[in-house]
Each structure stands twice: as structure tokens, then as C-alpha cells.
Image 1 (tube, rainbow, N blue to C red):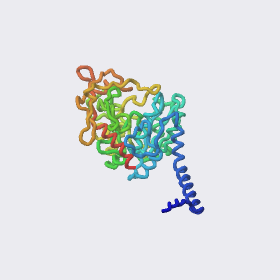
Image 2 (cartoon, one colour):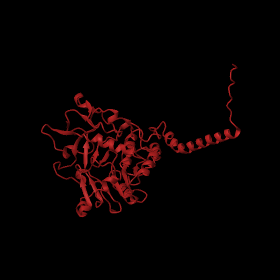
Image 3 (cartoon, rainbow, N blue to C red):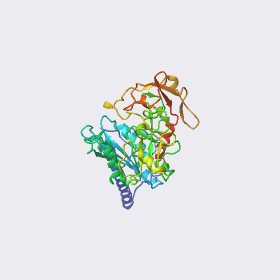
Image 4 (cartoon, rainbow, N blue to C red):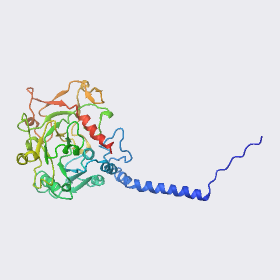
Length: 390
């Protein structure tokens, strides 16, 4: 039997031209889609953390090095189910601020439902020009030089936050504006993960004053990657509780006594509001203005966590004993410390610019009581999960 001849595969000229045109169209589509993203990645190469633009919901995301991208910002806007808008105003950036902490900060608030974050900076005291090109390329971030820094107190923070709340190119065009620092994270209660869901619960309120809970940046626990929400704070769950200067046992502590931060509707409050709010507003606006500093909502602060001279931590983290760092996953995958759940801190330990000994009760042995926040990791992970819904 004679062997069969192999059949030659060939394409007609018309088929070849069709395939060539399809290939060329795909290349053009890919190029037009990826070039802006690649510019954002490669513009930062060698200077800043690179970002992976192609993954919307990785199994683990480190927002300190992979912030919410402009593409993800667009997806979050497209998937939003509420037309309520909100913005964050950050006072003047100065001193040694780590870029990684800023990236984590903006990612957290973008996932919390704030559509834009406004920063001011001092060009003289902080070389933000190389980093601002990276942050400025994020569609949800605006950086502006601070023209008020030479007048007013504390780097012109009152003037800056007033500009942010009253000028249309900044926060005045939004329904809600929150003024916070890079080491402050707004907690909205255990079951609320967007600012829109929070404010819609109390439609008559136009002014929220949030008290502060301070967390230790000196004590840490060991956590696994699965238990880390990606904001770089899950391993710092020890808190002194509610901050209240001069009267730590009082039931409610608004204004500067509680280092409060304000979420307000700029259209309703054109007047100047102090950085820690106003007791006059709370007393004169009736049910329209409220103060929360307990389990309804509050600001969680890790004093100085965003500061790092030469890119290093302020102090080495002191991990608690081996028994305390042993972890196990409870039902539902919530990470917990076995025991004990409390720790004590010397009243002289550095906890930021605030006098913690005046803000918290001192124990008979001269120490302050740190409590373990077992809701912290769950809360951060629930906020990070908003990315998967986009």
C-alpha cells in the first residue's frame, strides 16, 4: 500500500489579510487600553512602589505598596449604588512622612467610599516633587502646595481645612467632607463599611464629631498573610481606648478634649470650623449635629505611624510574649490572640504629641492599660473586600 502524501496547509491571500487585520486590531486595542496604565507604573519605577494594574481582587493585597489604582477607582465609581459623594481633606504634609503609609491611607478611604482625597504640602520642608508625580497620577488624589503655611498655627492647618471645605475645586463640591491625618482611620461601627451607608442611616444629621481611640505603635502581634487586610495595621491591635484629655472618665468627650475630627456637609457649614470641631455647633444645631466616641463610630489613631525618618520605623516594634503571639483562626476565619487579652504600657512611653497620662486613667502601679481590639482585623478586611464588589 503506497504511503499517503501529507496535505499542505495553506491560506488564501484574502484569509491571510483578514487574520492580519484582526491581529493588528487586537494590538491597537491592547495598546490603547494599557498605555495610560503602563505610564503610571513605569513613571514610578525606581522611585516608588510599583502597582499591578491588572488585578482587581488579588488573594492578598498590600496597599502600602499596591494602592488603589486609577482603573480600580473607575470601577468603584461605576459600581457605586449611592449618589452621595464624600471627600477627605488632609492637612499639610510636612516632616518625614513615608509614601507607603500615604498609599495605605488613600486606599483605605477610597474603599470606604470617599471619592477623592485632597492633600496640601510644604515644598520648602518636604521634597514631595518626586512622590507627588506618583500620587498626582492617581485619579482620586489631588496635591496642592500650601500657601497658608507661613501664617496661622501648626503649618496653616485651620486655613487649609477651611479652604478644602469652602472652595469648589476642593471639597465644597462634595456632599460630605472629612478632615483627618494620615495616622487616623474612621471606624463606622462593626457592620458598616462605606460612608454612604453610614450617613443614610441618620438623614437628619449634617455634622458628625468623631472622638478618638489611640492605639499603641509600640506593641505588636504576629499575624499571617491571610489575616492581614493589607493596610499595615492589623498587627497593632492594642488600644488605650477612648481619648479624653483632662477628664478621662467622662461619658462624652467632644472638641479638643477628645481630639475630635469632623465630618460635615460643607453646604450647611460655610463658617470656619476648628480642626477639632466646635462645641457651639453641637449645642446650637440640636439633633442636626452629633458627637460619637464609643461604639457608634470613632477615629482610630496610631500616633506617628506615618512618620519614619529615612524610611525606618520610629522605634523597633516590641512583640509581646510568645504565648500572646500564638494565633488561631476562630469560626469564620477571625484571627484572635489566645491569652491574655490585655497588656500594660508605661505612662512615659511615647504615644505621639498627646499627653496620654492626662487622657487615660493611670493604674495603681503607674502604667496604662492596653486592651486588645478583636474587631480590628475583621473591620479592615471588610473594608478591603469593597474592592471585590467593584
